[in-house]
Amino acid sequence: MSATTYNTFADTGYFANIANAARQLVAALFAVKPVVSQRNKEESLWWLNRLAADSELHSPNLAAELRYIASRG
Image (cartoon, rainbow, N blue to C red; front, top):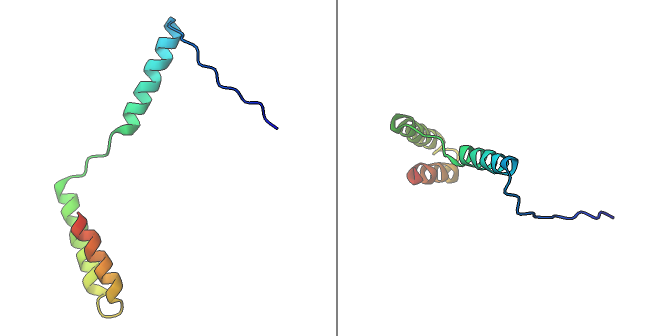
């Protein structure tokens, strides 16, 4: 059995401020979405549509799903 406790203290000292700033910096760095260029997006859509056309004869359901994914952009 584990006896884990969580205590919150209202530390307003120098090191607490540094820790809070570091925590906020890390959260902000990982919250940013990567930028996708318009050309890369268009190439991905073209690739999905081409893949759908190639699989149309042997797997029409897969082709429909690929076109749906491409339409969501």
